[in-house]
Image 1 (tube, rainbow, N blue to C red):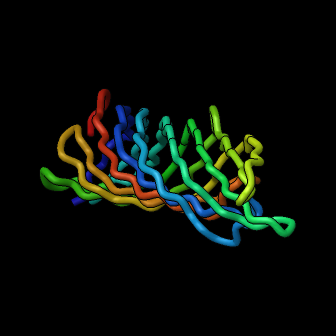
Image 2: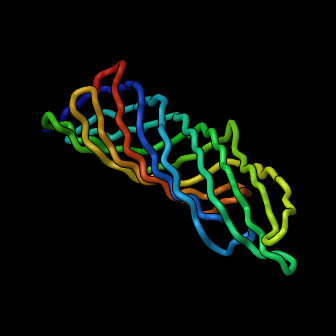
Length: 198
């Protein structure tokens, strides 16, 4: 049996938690490798546009999220015959936008779905404040490094019950000329439909 329906739209709110691993660029703090991990909240909204459906429902999903990230670490590096200690504080306030193509089951109370798409983030603020101290001396200096945006792709899935959705999303990220390279993020997300049929 084929269910012939018109295209439909809905929108709602998003709340989630993100665990991100940021891999340092070899040019930042003079590290060849290394990473730092941080947890942060996600909050924002989504809009969904469904195609006419048959046994399943295909559609485009778009969301815009606010993601604040706060991290700190200590690093020792070598430069010009001297070792340095560096205490670093990272401050990121990101606006993330994602677009994905999704398939949702139309049968049963619990409806599984999966999706794939692309994501990008623009920083309201993205900087690292660092204090350098040469080992065995009292010399120190401070620096601020500016970060830029992210680009990447995502894969995810979850289940829908009436107006609520619970999902897991994985993101692979590349950074635009910044201190990090090839990061990844694991997101646990709750969505609630405010308008339109789920």
